Structure formats: structure tokens, C-alpha cells
Amino acid sequence: MAVRWGRRPINCPGYRHIDDPADREYIAGVWGIPVEELPWEGAAATEMVHLMAEGEIKSCRIACSNLMVSLPDNAVVARALDNLDPLVVVDFFVSETAERADVVLPGTVWCEDEGTTTNLEGRAIKINQASDPPGEARRDWEIVAELARRLGRGQYFQYRNVHEIFDEMRLATKGGVADYYGITWEKIDAQEGVFWPCPTLDHPGTPRLFAEWFAHPNGKARMFATPYRPPVEEPGGEFPFRLTTGRVVYHYLSGTQTRRLGFLNAQAPEPWVEIHPQAAERLGIQNDEVVRVRTARGQMELKALVVPTIRPDTRFIPFHYGHRHAVKQLTNPVVDPTVKIPEYKACAATVEKLDAEVQPGPGPTVNFTPETAPQMFPYTVGETKAGPRDAKAY
Amino acid sequence: MAVKTLFVDPSRCIGCRSCEAACRECDSHKGESMVMVDFVDRGMSVATQPTVCMHCQDPVAPCAQVCPVMAILISPDGVVQMAEPSRCIGCRNYVYACPFGVPKFDVQARLMKKCNLCYDRTAQDLKPWCAQDCPTQALWYGDDEEFMHQREGHPVNVTAFGEQTVRTRVYFVMPEETAQVDISALLDQIHAEAAGGEEGAQPRREEAWIL
Image (tube, rainbow over all chains, first blue to last red; front, side):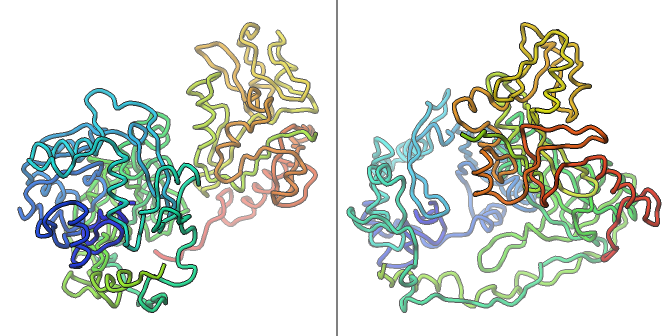
């Protein structure tokens, strides 16, 4: 939903491109603002951290995002967040990120508000309110509208309810690739969800995308063979193992919710490092022993789980945890040059017993620097905008 | 109408504990799960096994047979119920009697607790919570005919413990046609394999291929 409604640094609602003059004109018209006031393409979330650390971004409002657990190399993230004045965090629990905020605004969870969401199959569905927000908590859209009012821009946020916001979004996506204009709450109820695009009020929605043609000018799909590109950092020198991170079935993303739920948290209250028995034997590490895991960024102490269900050269640590249990103390902040996603899944690390002396040695093998990293796709992100925009076919 | 029952397929269990989470939501034992998910041997594999009450039919409910106060009752459809709180004296005989290690003793309530196949739900033709929630159909509820149509594998409801066999209302799903699940034979086989190895009692080991 977020992407189709323009919450990406390159997008306006409906997959419109924020740098495209015609798209800018249309969106400014819908929102009733001078077109010059629309920003141009911005930085990706992973790039914003560095802009914050450098002072380029001076303040930030973060809603329901736990950067201290979700972004790699969280020492840099902490520095970036502390550099902001003010940092405002809207969240329904005090996450590791909210702890660093100058102002925390209590938000709401999904069942305390109504609205729509689009699920993975592209079906817009309605979510109904089940209970009222507790205490001083307010709905996210109310917080945004109230902030706008106090900052003197209240005239652009004159919403009385979520339905009015949805109607504005329908208008804003009208004519775009992800056209929601024909999706109304009534139709969602009647059809048990509506698939986008749905350009007119009598359109039933599009359960199967690209059934006739793709959203490119010639109607054909674009295929790209991408050569294998190794991770930026590979085992070597002082750091002979590959560290990967991942999920535990009991926790959801940064664990802001699930680490507060008794039953789920009891299943996996703290992270561990998985080590193959052969590697453990060589390192003299017992199952359940607390060990130190170190990378070029930092180190952490956690329990070893000695199991043969992992490669002997690889270590695994689940990522849902915060503070001294955050594996993001260790992971590599390099991002993919095209899509800006960090290399969460591979970095060079070492595992040692707690009483082992740290012997500074040569660093890990580094395959690329930001300057020498090859592009993943043979085009830049901006180039793709020529495609979908011209294709009004479907 | 054919009798509906649970089919337990350990090969499909991914150890997510959704069944436990669902079971503990029931008001009759809030916060406590009557189904247990265990790693078979985490030191060797990620295999997990859900354990529910098998509702023994022949011999009928050993737990009920050893109950000195007839607190554990069996419904006409063969479902072995949880101990009746007004009768249960907390003697714990059933702990020793159950061949599958299912019933628990609630120390604080001084009460025997076990799975009753969600009798309130199944009596109304709803699935038990565990089968309702299981994302992989490791716990599946239905009758024989539905099983034949919808599922793969071979249901077995006879478990052998040495000389003694137990026929249960709940089925295990086995990969191959087999008359009974013979646990001690399988254990013997594993021990024989282990003893045949070079390192004596050491379990099988994979080849060193990286370090």
C-alpha cells in the first residue's frame, strides 16, 4: 500500500514519479498546493541515516519504525538519531528508537483505527475499528493533521474521518498505474476486497495483473540477467566466518510488539548464535555457553546453540532484539547500489570464548567500496519511470 | 457419518507452536497449552513433534482405568475427558499410566489436565483449536474419507510399546504403509546404527566439508 500511495522517495500516489512534471502538476492539483512546494526525489531510508549523522537532515518524525533494531551498524544509527533536534517518534510502544526521541507521541495499533490496506495479492481490503485508542493515544492521521494545524498548514489536512482521506487518495491515484479510483469502501465490502488497478466506478478490479500486456510502452516484459555479485564483505583475516541474520517464527520484525507478548517472548526471549558442532569443537565452545561474536563494527555476547543444521563456515543470529542483544551492532551498513537495501545477510565475523584475548589482525576481505560497486541492474531507478507512466494500456 | 478425529503428521510439523498458542486461549485452561511441541533432538535436526492426547481406545484410556475416584470420564464417542474437578484428588496415577506422557498435573489447582479434543467445539462439528490453527496440517481434523481425498500418507492408530499395543482414536500419519508405530523397534534400530559406527555410541556425523 505504502508504495502505491507514494510513500517512497521517488513516488507520488498511484506509482506516479515525483520528478515527472505532468505527475507533479496533477498531484499538486489534487492536494491544492503550488507545484513548487512538492519536494523532488529524496533519499532512501538507509541513506537518510548518513544525512542525519552529517546534519543534512535536522529533524525527523518517525512513525512505527524501529531503526535501532532494523538498520545495520546501529552505533551509527544512534549517532544519527541523537544528532536530530527534535526527533519525534510516533509509536504504540516505547521502542528502542522511541527511547532516543525528544518527543514520543503515543500512536495506535491497527484495530484501533479503520481504513484499508492492500495485501500481497494486490487486493485492497477494509480494516474496521474494534476498540478505542487507550489513554492519550491518537490515530496516526490525527497526529499528522494536528501537527500540520500547529505548523500553520492545517488547511491542507481538513479531514473529519478516514473515509475522506481514502477518497482523496482515490483521486490522487486516478490515471496512475496503480489506479484506485474505482475502489470504494462499499465495493470492498460487496466484493470481499478489490484488486488494483480499478480505474472506474463500474470496473470490477484486476485480479490478475499483466494478463494481456505488461506496463511498458511496447507491452512486453523486461528481463534482465544480472551477473553474480559477491557480498561486499567476505570472511578473511581476523574474521573467518560468514555471519547471517534472520527471523524466528515467534517474533515479528523488530519485536516491538512480540517481545511484549508473554507466550511469544517466552519461546525466544533472547537471541543466540548458531554454530556447527565441528566449528564449536575447534573453538572449544559448548552448547549454551555465552560467547563473543565480533565484526569490524562491534561485538556482542550471546549464547551458543551448537547444531548441525547450519553450515560449518556460517553463523546465524536472529535479528528481532534490541540494545545489547541487537545483532545490528555487528552487521554491515553497505547498501545495494540500485535498491539501497543493506547487506543484512552476509558479513565477516569471528566467534570466540569470553576469556579469549582480542588479537588485532588483518581485516575481512572487502570486494567493493561504494565507488567500485557495480550496478545491479543495467538501468538506474529513475529510468524505469519512462515505462509505466506511458502505458495506459490496462 | 464417519467419525471425525485428529491426524498427527510429524513430518509436516515446522515447530511454530501455533497449536500451543491457540490451545492456551481456551477459557477452560486459559494460558496453558494441552498440546506440546518438542524438538525431537535439536542437537541433530530441526525436526519437531506435536503431542496431543491420543484418546486410547484399546485398552481404553489407561489414565481413566487407574483413576481411583472415576474422575476421568470417557464420552460415548471415545473422547477421553479432562478430570472432573469436583472428583479429582490429584493422585497423579495417570502420569504413570499414560503411555504417551500426555496428562499434566497442575500443582496449584491440584488437578489433572489434558487435551479433551476441544469437546465444546468438536461436539458442534468445529475443528479443535490446534487443527484450526496449524498452518501446515501437521495437526488435521476430519474423517477417514476426507483424509483419503485430501491428504497423502498412511494413517496408523496402533502404537506398540514392546509387547503392549495401544489402539487410539487419534491417528499418526506415516510415510509408508505400516501396521503399527513400533517405538521400541525404532529406538533399537537407532541404537544399533549408533553402535555400528566407528566412534561407539556417537551418533552419525556429517562429513567435514568446510573448515
